[in-house]
Amino acid sequence: MTRSLPLAALAAAALATAACTPNDPAAAAGDDASAGGPATVTVSSTADACTLSAAEAPSGNVVFKVTNDGDDVTEFYLLAEDGLRIVSEVENIGPGLSRDLVLTAKPGSYQTACKPGMVGDGIRAPFTVTDSGADVAPTGAIADQIAAATTSYVAYVKDQTEQLLAGTQEFVAAYKAGDDATARDLYAPTRAHWERIEPVAESFGDLDPRTDLREADLEADQEWTGWHLLEKDLWQPQPDANGGVAYTPLTDAQRTQYADQLLADTQELSDRVHADDFPATIDAAAIGNGAKGLLDEVATGKVTGEEEIWSHTDLWDFQANVDGARVAFEDLRDVVTAKDSALADQLDTRFGALQTLLDGYKQGDGFVSYTDLSEAQVKELAAAVDALSEPLSKLTSAVVL
Image 1 (tube, rainbow, N blue to C red):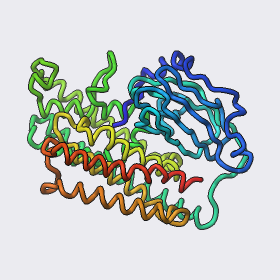
Image 2: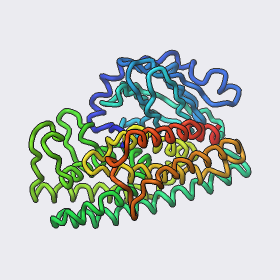
Image 3: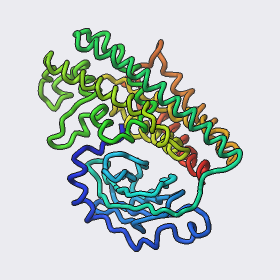
């Protein structure tokens, strides 16, 4: 999962804002916007600052050019005004590297956040998108293709959410009944539905950390809930893998409490996705950025084996993230082909190469344990992820700009 932006973020935002120092708003957009191109805002992320070239940009296509000028891996977020909902993000930006966040921004008040070290609430500041009055919506055949892509992707998200809810109901029933063998069998295939649409779940802010937070990412005084808490209880670690102390199993009452909360949170996700206003939050930029976000999830959690540290079912998650990214690309394929056919061909080739590697680790209806892979095999997977990540980072720009 993406490292969370917990509820405590609201209280911390005012303190973090002081370290983020945007320059004159006139620097936003520059000549590009006046010429009809995207507004451009540069971002410099360091250990203690998140410096934007502007505190506002006109509505329409906006590009945040994020450079990591610090020593730790960083992330950059555009958040809704409440500081909880993620509008869009770029993750896993290594020291000295730059990444672009491309989106179509509506007028309104937002927050920006750099997160050096990919932990904590981030260094935040208010950001305003003014009403440019310009119509940046695509026209003609491209508009029709984007509309079809959006309709298809929304249907996919709804279907995956429905399957996730049904699977979670079965998992919770088995877990609460003490049928751990069945719960373990259901764990990975059920979570695959979550992993395929995780960027959508993350966009709902506090829902993602409640459901998918890893123990390693817990902050001081933060309650641990969700899938990975139950994972640890189902695959109980030995003391040497538990900080040197014996693991204390959850009581029957705790099992019921946390399982019921997981189901309630999954129901909430389903309700939000099926709400009348949900499709309005999905556009071509959201689909493209979601595809790249899913591959970032692979690079930062699945390849390292840190996501499923107790069950070692990381390859299930790996495949699900790749599935979600591929579906997003395929929904946008007609647009990409029309605007950059070479990029479409390159993405087809590299998705295929990564899938071929994953197919080699299938076992029955699932995958071998991640601990069965050699160091060389893990490196081979990581290289294939990197090879796909480079062209996939161009997907949103190709579609939107």
